Length: 253
Image (cartoon, rainbow, N blue to C red; front, side):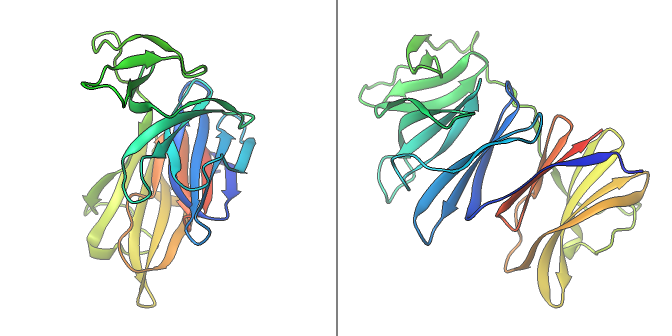
């Protein structure tokens, strides 16, 4: 009997652009962009019980904003300085369960996330002065110290791009150009690959245990170019996207 359980299968009305995990509260956040309507919305899902706290949630800025990081029950969003460039300027903090805006500051710019919270600088000041802030209030706590404020470990593992080994278990589809994305967890092997199907590329996901494929899913069909890695592992949970509009989470024992 396969020892995994589907925890999350959440569909969205737009392309999932980015995901972030709060490793303290075990909450998965997603940024969903709808290019046709030029709207961005956000979602929060508990990885402890699969509950969706909110989805299709918008803020006052309907397009020029995105996910920056997540920490201790708060989703940190950034704004864009201009509509035509990638430069970030300004931050807003969102409560993970209610979606309520806790604070915003249009002069803060995010630098990095540490074990003690986010590091920001005031974009009006040169040279930049890096500060640790309280993510729940936005208040400055103290000056950033690279020794004490080490970068946090988000506990996310990404697969390795590699050629299919000669002794690999038989897969339902042959990998295009013999390339796969590969990750091991306990007794599980997780693989995603591209294959040709009716002359078109499709992207597949396989879970293998004891040399046998025990789970498979088609992630994308009729795609024009090779897609990046299709999944990540957070602790014992496999997180992946299907058709770029659905988040699925499997619990692996």
